[in-house]
Image 1 (cartoon, rainbow, N blue to C red):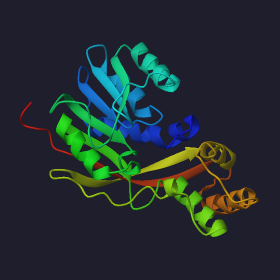
Image 2 (tube, rainbow, N blue to C red):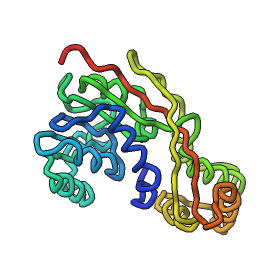
Image 3 (cartoon, helix red, strand yellow):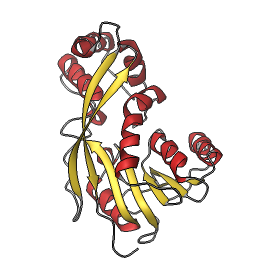
Length: 247
């Protein structure tokens, strides 16, 4: 899934703050950011870790560095290093992370673990490579803006794209716990939200796009303030493991 910068700032930014706090991230730690998407969490981590910390931002893919066409990866890596943290952006398959047992102090993931194939093995791998792990994932449904878009899509076309049904239940590996987490996604206008969601790979049947958008606007109406801004409640789950005793 590709997050636009607008959508990432509105939805992922506040969640990144909560995840960094919940995971107990401190300056100087070795941290793995698993499937970081738009890099929102990595940027927040870089401001906390400082020059004595280290950060690896990992994307789903082959176990090779994101070289060649990875302009976005290189830009993120340069940005993280400008925050004076030792940083690397790379890729690896979710079920086989290329790191040793306990190589990191903390492994974290923001909203992406349930979006990749094999969410449960990904959690188990996070637990293996770090002394502690934490992730924020969607609740029973997609994050509310995508859930509303999926409803609009289904109302118009009879079905929704697979990436708008990304929150199949994940069975937690041993020692993981889950607690509810709530936040609010804020957008300046319905137009801004639609522009952000247009970054998703959406393809509608001929002539259906405008109808989907009108239906989506109707579903957004209860969340729209008098000034046109949107405040959409988002229900999440915070998953985490207790600190390992074998540091």
